[in-house]
Image 1: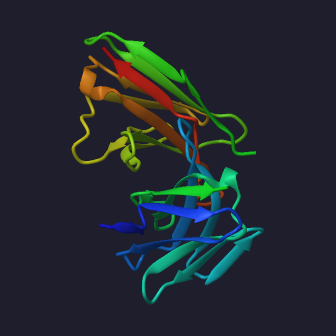
Image 2: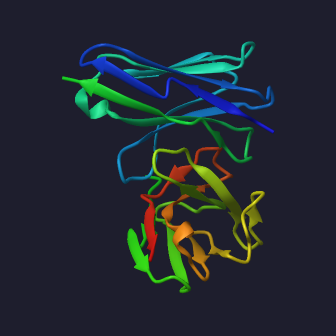
Length: 111
Length: 116
């Protein structure tokens, strides 16, 4: 089955700097890759997703890149702000099948 | 759009009792709902997948007789933790998806269960 590895487990950056979180997946059949942000005590919130027919997608300060050959995808957050502090999860899935989640990255933005 | 609610948000119960958690899709029809469990500082663990009108599919190691799932309508799924024990204390989160519109799962706010 699918296995998703996420790195780093914790990340601390200065406000205004960029943050990058990386994930690798094992199943080449996976074709859907969402990223979720989870604040303390709340459910995960979808922030961006990408499908395998696209190499990059951007939404304001957030971007995701996908390398199907290497089976890895990354989340990029630019001009970080204190409210970006949260736990971020990547996931991989195939069509309407279940998602497999990474271990999570605790991102801290230092003012 | 794509709002999912859960009720209750927190519940404390005595060991041996049963607890029911509701998951509702408020502004879309959820053909599929998922139930996850999350321990502190850990990732989401899928417990089961339920499709409207059919029996849930449980992940390996999840006891179907202990975690009863009902998905009776396109907007409501329930998870009942039967004969709860302290080790069942966790954060339970549901997600919902309209398979006819794509793969995106929308998560509820979660339910914190504490079994004394």
